[in-house]
Length: 246
Image (cartoon, rainbow, N blue to C red; front, side, top):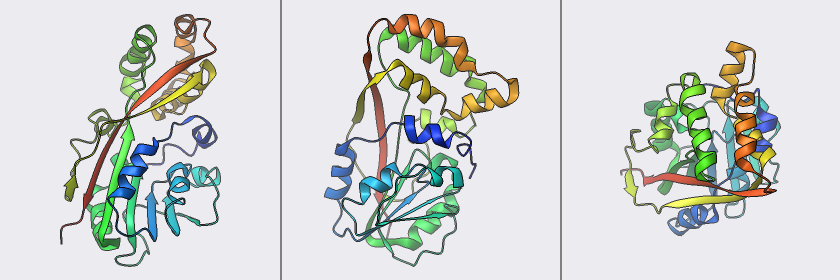
């Protein structure tokens, strides 16, 4: 698994979007037990923190020490640094395993072997993420061009799985049909810019070219934004959920 996010961990915790309540409601509805959960690739701990509302204990792991240093602290979250593919967790330990916007970085075969070992008989694996946000036609055009043409060559090859909404990842589990979800925010212009700066491709561009590509779209983006203090920002959510085959 690559660590693309330690460098901008402080931005990640401030500007990355979360997930809608409907996502958690869906998962909880399909669980018979809610004792222990594992949030793998936890990043800033936003999903782990939400899971504490439902589970007695939440274990949260990530390879990024920078991310964990900026993660949400809760009494029943137990953070640790480590790879997704090899852990010291017990067999059949978890009622739920979640991976938010991270599974495309994993070694699928090795991680799924660990999932099958640590997931309880009736437990669920849920992998989910979000696509490119939408605001309005004019702004979306600028962002789409930036995404594809300016920083397009700087995305890691694994990014294709996000663009394909995880539909093309291997998923050897008894799958449960999931609903279509969106997460909507009211963001100021500065928040959008902050979010763009969390993108791994932007960081790769800066490393190679010694300049920030976001600066190249600042003026047209600000003009398209207009005089509105805030605008609605909508993130399409995708998700795959399944139980292990017994």
